[in-house]
Image (cartoon, rainbow, N blue to C red; front, side, top):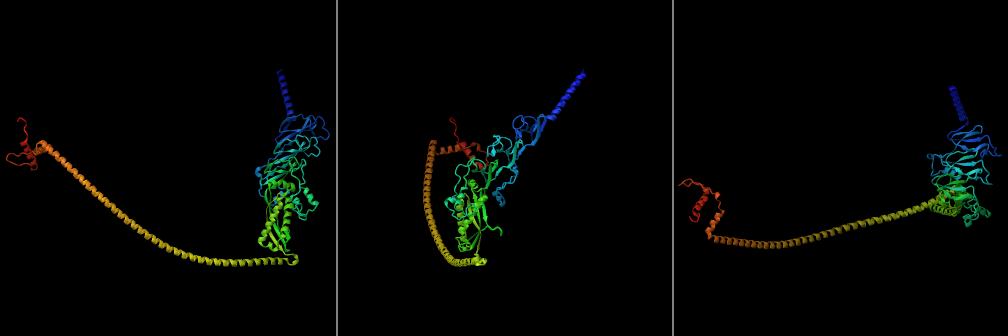
Length: 580
């Protein structure tokens, strides 16, 4: 019984494993990274005629929703699938960007033609076209994402990764708009309402009448007469407002912009001054401007114009001309040629050989070109005359010889004038040199006179100083002697006073001592008593030494004889006590 139960359990486990394996390998849909899956329903309601993708639940065919990377489980009898790539919009690699701040001739030509692009892997955008949905309104090419209509979506895909059904959406990669420093981007709306305000603005040159009939205009360098002038005036449109079709006034500053190229066109304009030259490049390409001079000579000049467009006028320039090439072809080039001919024909041939008149011609041409181009919002910095050739009229025969003779004659006249000026300057220099030598001699004489006068003045000043010094010293000695005399007199008086005072003091002291002694003598009873008193007062018995050598001998210490005698005398005169 246990074996049967164990066998049944094993069979159940095996059956479950088989079912799980079949489910795992049959029903599982695995979508790897960077891929997505498009689900296709095999059963369900038929799609309407002409519809390729199911837009409602339960419809048969390709489903509009896609599934991202992961594992999904679908019934293979009902569903089929197709794994496709995710839509990746590159974000670019900034380390590869090459910013160009100064364009060369080739790059500038590409920029003017609208084909220039900066090197490097810049960000891109995805322009999405919806292939499934309702029909757009009549004439509507660009639709919004929320409308659900077929057509180009207004919104673009910025750099990133997206799950998009390739049967529903078509994505085209386009470079993002890159505006480097030194440039601005002029925006032109390709779709929108027509401007409602008057667009038939008359050109300033035409309205002011500055261009007379027969004068080349900005359109093609040809003359405009009658109806042609009015026709050209009507081609100038006003700038568009937001939501209108046309060129917008506001320009894009340097940066990176994600703009739908199907909606807006961005035209790069280099800000700053550029150069436009009409010179001789080679024998085959000679763009110099030729015109007759006042004297009939043919003048050929090569001119370079330094010009530029201010950012605030960039939109107006693109709106009127379309690109920079047309600015050069319709304004600067024709006006430069016309002004050169009009002004140059008033000068003689020799004026183009002389330096002063050439500079005057260049200044007049620059001023007139600035005046005309300023009305078209074009800034002209300067027009430089780089090359000038003077050719004699062909009717005179060998024009080269005539031209050289003209140059040689003018040069010789200038050389003669310069020689005369040089000689005059040399004479003036010699005169000035002689005057300088004379003035130097006068300076030397004046210098010696000043030195002599200075020595005399110094000697006088020294003598006067010594005299005054001697007088001061003598006066000082006299005053010192007088003071010393006064001091001596004061010293004599002092000595006299002090001597008299000392004598008086001694006299008074002696008188006082004498009176004291007198009083003492009187008190003792006489002079003899006073002597004894004095002797007794100063007597010192312990200092007496007696030597006795025997009777009848007088051998004693003679040095002490006086003391012995005094002792003997005391013994004889000693006072006896009362009662004895």
